[in-house]
Each structure stands twice: as structure tokens, then as C-alpha cells.
Length: 432
Image 1 (cartoon, one colour):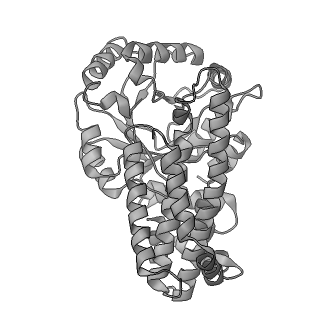
Image 2: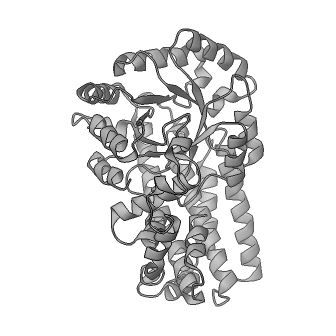
Image 3: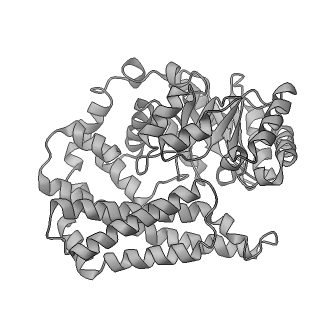
């Protein structure tokens, strides 16, 4: 979607430049895959080394990384297919194209299943998918992609259109809040711009400057700031509390994400975790509680309703939201169309794999506010960096600005994820 917006915003682009761009993205996706394979292995080893994980339970600890791996494989396949559709010199036979389409369908099925539950026995799907992928991206195919990308790749091609593209996406360079983007409308239920933090940002002895980042967001957006607390350890929660108490923002909106594996343990466990987290953060209540997919399963929903009623009555939370991907309007309606009604929907969404437009429309039709949560904390993967560089040039703040405007222009509230390098957060905020 971001690529389509980019190309549409610059008008006619020479065929060879489009081919170079798409070829470069396909190669970048393969680089992401290599990096993610290493990260998955490291995460699995760490989970197996932990006393609270058995070998059969380790798959839950690597579920997010495996999902990113499958998504990168999907991007590689789709961009290869796009190159071949435009330039038949890419050496793929009819049978290989059928294999490509079959593999794409298998990956989509795995990702759809993963939206409901962690991928179990992921070793099989992982190696089957990666093995088949490497068979399609054989040496002569890779050689042709490198030739089509050229020595400079897409950076030397579409970059020349980047400034015009960003100007068009930002309505000829006018401040977003004065044109198509109305932060007050987007932030009616959940503030339009927020900061997502967890162990990566606030774990360890170094602490984190959450208050400073939130103050910068509020000053830049002229709206209340949103602090979204991701599942994290006690130390991170204490560090967040220390920083919050050092700040002076009295209009802070705080939401809390319930860990996906807690719902299966029962409502009492969830309530206990929420109350304990409030105490560690020094808060009386959360403005919004994000519940995972498991909470909305048919057998769990009656218990979830009772739990929500209890937390509303005791003023532990003011509202609740759904934290789960939905790749179709049908699944979005299934998740969001219920009573009591959720106020918001926290969905994975970034320039590489955005939320499905039909799912976003379904949410808005139900008066549920969609909130974008980037898949990657900190620096994005190679594909995302390539698209952002193509759109906005070398400056990281310009790249972030392009991504932020693009998300807000679609009517989603957004959250910034500085990642392990929390020092990068000022750069994210400056993009506003």
C-alpha cells in the first residue's frame, strides 16, 4: 500500500526505475530473512535456557519473530512475482510460478492462523517455507535481480522522486494538522500519537526518559500524550514509574497491554496482573486495557465480560480495547462487534505490511478507533528502510515523518517504538 501511494503520488515513472525498485525490495526482504533466522535461533536458545520454559513451550517465546520471518518471506515472493510480471527476463518457469503462488498461499494461511494462536511445531513450517523459498530464489534468479536493481539499486532510481512524493502525501508540504489530517478527530477515543515502551526501552539499570519523550509528543502534536505499556518485567515498570513521577504531564493517557498467554490462565490471573502493574507504576487506574485474541474466543468471552464488568465497577480501567491482528473485515467484525463494546483496536501496521483496508473500515463502522503498532521496535527491517529512504531520502527524521504522515492520513492513531536505543526517541518525536 505504501509503495502504491508512493508511485501514484509521483505520476508516470519509467518502467526500468520501477523494476529496479521492486528488484531491490525483493533482495532487501531476503536480507531481512537472513537476519530474522539468526534472531529466531537466538530467541529459541534463550527460551530453552530459561528455567520456566520446556522444549515444547519454547515456540511461544519465538512466535513474534517467526511471524516476522514469514512476513519477510511473503514480501520476497510478492516482489519477485511483481518483477517477473513487468520484466520476463527473470528466469522463472510456469511451474515455478505455480510453486510461488502455492507457497504464498501457505504463508498467508500460517499468518492467518498465527493471528489466533502461536504457531505450534513452528520448526516444520519454518524450514519448509524457507527451504522452498531458497529453491525459488536460486542463483540465476538472484543474479538477474541484482542486474535489474543496478549498482545503485532503488536508492539511485526512485530517490529522485522522493521529495515530490512526500510533498504530495503531505498535501504540498502544508502542516498535516491543517489539511487532511485532523489529530483531534483521530484522537477522539485514544490520543492520536503515543509512545509504546517495554523491556527494550526501560528494562535494565539505565532507566528511561519516558516523561521527556511524552512531553515532546504533547508539545509537537498539541494533543494529550498516550503512554502504551507493553508486557514487561517488574524492573521496567519501576523505571517507567520513576520517569513518570519526574515529569509534570497531568493529562497523560495510559494504556496497558495484557500478555497473550495470561488469558488462558483465567480472568483472576489477568486482574491480579493489572492491579500489580498499576501499583508498580504508581497509578490508580488505566485509561484503557488492551486484551489479546484469546480473551475473545467463544469459550472465554463470558468470563472476559465478567472480568471487564468487575474492573469497570472497581474503576481499575476506564475502557478496554482489542489487541489482535485481523486480516479481513469478517475477522475484524468478529473481534470488535460485541458488548460491552471495545473503544479501540491495536493492530500491527507499518509501511511494509499495513492493516487490511477492509478491516479498518469495519472497525470505523463499529465506532472502534484503530491504533497502529509497528511490528519492529527501533530501526525497521531492510525493506521498510528502503521504502522510507525512497520516499524521504537519507534523513532518518524525514523518513519517520513520511511514515507518520502516511499512517495518520489513513485515520489511524499511531504509537512510536524507539526500541533498545531509547536515545533515538527524540529523533522519532522530532519527525512530528
